[in-house]
Picture 1 (cartoon, chains in turn green, yellow):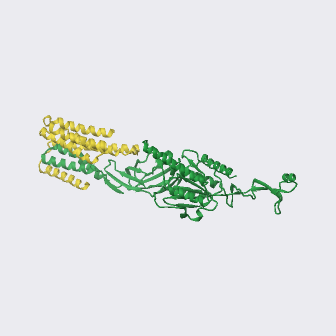
Picture 2 (cartoon, chains in turn purple, blue):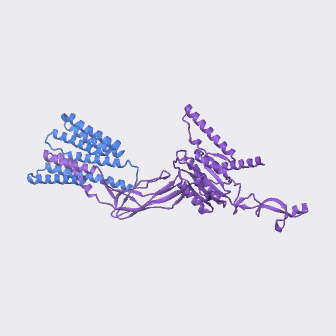
Picture 3 (tube, rainbow over the protein chains, first blue to last red):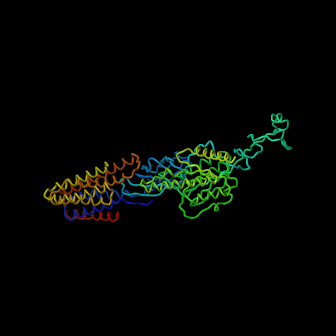
Length: 422
Length: 163
């Protein structure tokens, strides 16, 4: 432990020395009497200077938690000979809050003390807690001994997931069994159509009522249940924020909710974080993939970059054929806008969920600012129109709205587009 | 806040006593005590703990000046002045420590309170003993001079060790 002495201790000793010497030379006992308390305090300070040798560790009750939950961190303290006062402080990131931190306790003898710090997880993120900072001091505060305590403890706080009942259905499904009703016709549950019997058709496929009416054998056709490949394309170039909320925060929340729900439906889900750093996670299914995705989302951050980036950077397997690409973006960076149009040009089934930055942007109030603000809004409208002309549904989502309503809007856009094609 | 007020009160007591001890010299003593009080206010309000020593020095100097000006008669209240200055220093330091919002166990507060009280009581006893010995005719001469010098050397050694 590193020792620090209170600045008043040498002052006391100096006062005592000056008082005693002045008393001696001037022959005034009052000066000696004035100096005596400081001399005694300095002597007491010298006597109290023994290292309490405080040690211990920091432990978390669990390594994973959901936003809004509480996690207990236990700081265990030991001291070889006791300590009159031990201040314990667990440094916390802004996303975590705790009451009674820092805290001061007394360690009597060689007893072990355990302090519980209840951490309130206020926002998602991946954190490394610790080391705790310990400061021991004597009873008069003349000496302090400071040291870090324990190794860093990982804590992952997952964002809360919005319950989605409806999802955007992909235009095309994959070959594996899933919960998505395919447009193709094969063995399945959902009735698709009737057709005339052909050699090789199974007897149980025959629709006897239709056959009796038509005086020939007719069989039922079904839509098979298949899974889909879904790629969550996250724009991490920019973040427009106000306080703790912002477009990036909303992007991560939306991506978590979508990944959770699509994986529940047995679809394969992958992630592409397209920004200053480009990172990706190949599509896969299952609970383990959900944890992989959420963990990768927690690590994702907005990094400023001026480098030109395109989707050629991504490995081919990241964007499998017939995949539904759900892009979650504030549509502020031209590189993302270009990459999305490129994806569409390559034939991907693309849906853009525009995390609206508008609520976070407040014009200054003067004429020029108002004009600039209106121009900016018009530019965004024009970009949206470009996407729609390319057949890409773009839906504006404000972070305080339900994501489900936005997804329903996409489905509605697709239904209208299908009717228009028909 | 309470600690800071108590520290200021102790200092004000010393200052007032020093100024009123010899009214003829009050115009000389009062500015010294006043500057010390201002420095103490800086310590207590702005947290400049490096000024605490100077505030105590000026408080002690004001008292010493008043006492020397008063004459050769021994001031029996000197131990109280010394303890008041020490208590002022301790309470100021405690007040500065309390600026950090720390959730303290009751035992920690009581322990420091007891320690400050014990230090003040012990200081008062030692200081009173010094004054009593000077008033009582226990003799003088070389032995006492050597003892005094040894005490002074011991304190200087302590200063060097703690500096």
